[in-house]
Image (cartoon, rainbow, N blue to C red; front, side, top):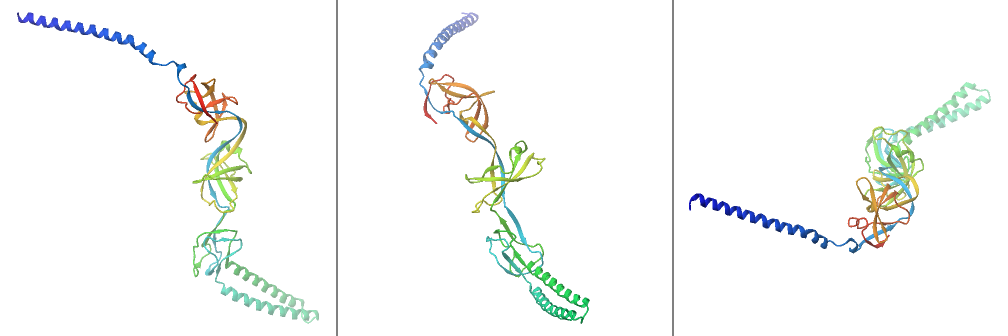
Length: 363
């Protein structure tokens, strides 16, 4: 056999194998495709034969709802001042303890007043002498022994001495530093023997009963807050809620933040609320009667709408709703629900419209 004949024989053999491969592949694929739909149909259970999905639900009821906003605020003292002296002098004695509660007018410090006390004694002696001289001249004047002018000059000397004593008494009072109002003292900034210049701070004094609260409300809600409006607030790090009453507001809206600042007062008899604390303020705006509330997890967001699943005749039925005020755990439904509807709250990722469900708990 020639080389040419051998090459032709090999090519024919390869061609024959390719035809057989294609033939058997088509037959196998055809059988698989024919069997596929039948197998899937047999494997998939009928919807009506599936077991009910256990879920929890609530029955909607009309209730009162108060709209509120949450803003940040801070506590401030009712009164606060750095106690200082009006006149210069050396501290003679200190009459308070750090952190002590003091009453209005209570003596805190005594400055050196030795020179003023000596001047007052001199004026007292001078007043007594002038009074005696005036009395003698009065007797002589009644007997026409002296003129009226001489008698009046003596009386004027008595009055002048009285005025000088009053001036010294006022200067002596300024040497005593007193509490301008009742409150709690802070840390002492001076010691006995220190020389004080006018305005030198001695100790911080704050009044925290009632405690004040400052907070900013957005301009669009500011008209809903008035003097006398009750608010509630919580301090950072505690779940306890406190109540306060709005007492004042700024006259102008802040042009940068577009907010209006308010001040409220809250009773603080035990002093548990300290100034400077961060506060979360709940400002109530408007009350709605007959509102329908559902748990926030019951709302299923869609592309352009929101839905809830209702329990009806053992199945889950989808209902399109519109929502309103959102709270921490609940949200208001303004359209799409009626009082008495049973709203499914769990298993929402497993159910589809028309799916059989079984309620295990109703809240």
